[in-house]
Length: 230
Ligand SMILES: Cc1cc2nc3c(=O)[nH]c(=O)nc-3n(C[C@H](O)[C@H](O)[C@H](O)COP(=O)(O)OP(=O)(O)OC[C@H]3O[C@@H](n4cnc5c(N)ncnc54)[C@H](O)[C@@H]3O)c2cc1C
Image (cartoon, rainbow, N blue to C red; front, side, top):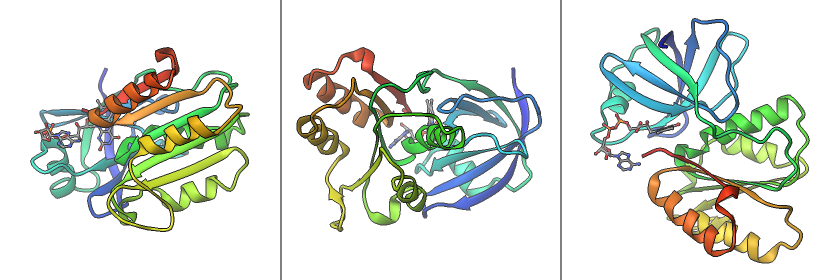
């Protein structure tokens, strides 16, 4: 069922990645952190993970990267006006947290793949959900492309939340290289990880590689959850 929504506001997170705030008409709309929606504007339909919880004004946030030649993103970055009405469907998907978090969790993403993890982290924070270690491993090219940096740094001051951004094209004081080297090192070095559960989100190549590396490291496929963007 398609539901009425409109564009409430936009915030630029980086030059090519913007946050779109969507107001949903249906007051009964509810969401499990980590799920996605479909957005239908004119004849274009695309899926987007929800990067937030629903706020008290019935607004949700999407974080979207512009793709050269992309139909929907060209519309969203060049044409859409605040207040534009469109339809959404959802929420959809099973990329969600377990009911009880009694395992160490790895959130592994590149670029806008961080969206469902931000929603899950907001849920954990807001509801004071008990958890074990949560490793947030985020890869991008350069420091200016890191998404939600200040927020993640603040979160990682909390017990058991370990935020590890890594850059593939710029030297800096933090980690360099791809996300793979980060979780490989943790799995090799950390003794006493508790039945780790892996969430991978983003574009197909990163996910394919991570999945095969994790399997080679002895992780069961039931402990690897995937959300593939395309
Ligand atoms: C479950 C799910 C959740 C998603 N959540 C998000 C999200 O939170 N944020 C977000 O930004 N996107 C997300 N996506 C991707 C989104 O649905 C669109 O595919 C994306 O915005 C591109 O749409 P478009 O119409 O602009 O491009 P299209 O017109 O569909 O494609 C344009 C061209 O770009 C190519 N292309 C597509 N992806 C890539 C890529 N990663 N790198 C290089 N070239 C590419 C295509 O092959 C095509 O040639 C999600 C996808 C799924 C399935």
